[in-house]
Length: 407
Image (cartoon, rainbow, N blue to C red; front, side, top):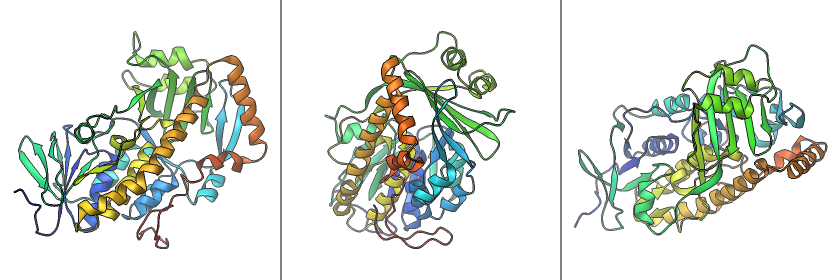
């Protein structure tokens, strides 16, 4: 019988070297686990451009002592908000109001920067790139889980499945689940030098399309766009030209940002989300996190944030390796309702943002303006229960008080 090892430290294998997987690796390493991260790609070169870390994920990173390093990268100061394509403001929200309500700033940073912060907290050799992995045994309370690699099998007390929206581990654990479905729109992302003319951070909602321009600490800007489109569609020429066709006549600085994009510098991905929840986020000795468990639309900016939360909560429940199988149900119980609630809220926001009829769009914009006149706090209430989340366990942020329970 293939029994789990009795030696200490316990062994964890993380499948996937993205943000959620690396956060889990750091958290488990700090809890005295022996951790191996298996990343299929040949290098940790993150797909994507920017990521917004809200106060909830920053507090999660506080648990592993990295939250303050992220906060130092905050670039948004002053006003920002929601506009229409002509540049008229639908809602104004200041960075101070956001920080005051949720206990911290919104930090925009390049994904590669965050990956660097996380990997710097891991021992050399923890991450193996060019290492595809297959779950061949989920294990149970009597035997270890087994992950097969080209170099041979790895036995583990815990397997963390952080292998993304197309998760092979998820399909192995729950073969009857339909998986993520297409949300009806596609996205573009780009990082370019900041325009010469100053701009106010914004998201702009049009008819079946949106655009966002946000500053990064290093002097560049992260811009993102979305539009209704058939699944699998691609531009007949290139994606920069597609952005010009769709957004080239929108307000400043949108045309300048598009013009600054280099050839091939625009990323495009269709958006999928987990409309039907999984039965659980664990089975045997395996736990799913991030997009592998609860892919969501980017309309609340919470996909990466929730993966970071998952990682910290999973490490909290995994403890120091004793009775992992008996402790994983608590991870599902804590994370599944919260994350699927955010999946549903993001889907509702996506429907609102992607309205395409002239009448519905005019009514939406009028409603947003009317609500905004009651004060910025009214709009920010949409993130109550999300951005104000507190992690379990002790935190290590400068001056932070220990936390004891999630919200």
